[in-house]
Amino acid sequence: MSKPLEAMCKTNAIHTTLINVSLPRRRSQIFNVRLIIFNIPPSPPSLPIIGHLHLLKEPIHRTLQSLSSNLGKILLLRWGSRRVLLISSPSIAEECYTKHDIILSNRPRLLAGKHFHYNFKTVAAAPYGDLWRNLHRVMTVEILSSSRLATSSSVRQAEVLLLLNQTMKGCACTQQGMTKIKLKSKFMELSFNVMTMMVLGKRYHGEDVEDVEEAKHFREVMRDAVDLSATTNLGDFLPILQWMDISGLEKKMARLMAKMDCFLQRSVEERRRILSPNLASNGIEGNMLMIDNLLSMQLLKNNVHLCSTQF
Image 1 (tube, rainbow, N blue to C red):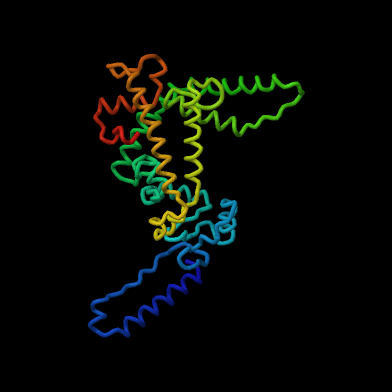
Image 2: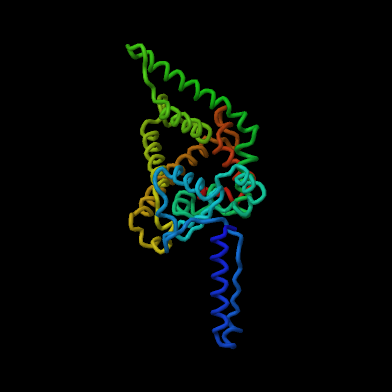
């Protein structure tokens, strides 16, 4: 513990002792106050109520790096009512993910998790417990196992080849000797296409889109979801502001989630119609789809954690 922090804890202990001594004997028996001093990491000076929120400036990663370089590799910050542990050491981070992974496994209950993760019911937002362990097992053993990923390797290869062909075609259409290509947007489209092809068997970005209107709707929903998830919600850090919804963020998330639910439900019903009675997909393509595996597990194993309302 740092010397200033140790001195502050000792001062608080002295003040607490003085208060207990000054109380009447009967009340001192009722209010048995004990001060427990934890070996907490150092923390920069904070403001009342908001804590260290005033220190967060763009770009956020450089701000956090500046704090850690000045105060140490492990810091305790307070973002409103939330305590945040800032770690900038690979060895300490490895220890957190190996020795103390269960202690640090719970996710914060943010507004985005409430609306975009079905009230914290997905593997990305669920607290550590039976639900999370079951969902994690389904993901690692049934959906993202090495054999499943090897089966879907042809999808990734086909999408990369399609991207290369489209890029070469764009270069050939120009009359100039050199052409600038924005690879960032290309790689984003590639990532989304690989995911949607593995999950739903459809492509929603770039060329060779099966349904133009459906693809447009999907892109709009995903863009809005990313934007709203990245929006800072003061209610996540100051609970007193949650019920106000000053910025209208919660209403926007609720409306967007309704659209996303409709899209996902249509996809589920479509795959159910395609699946044959023996639960095998009609065609080679269906055998690689993650949604088909989930639907088969739901019917065969009667898994309570894979109900239709959580798709």
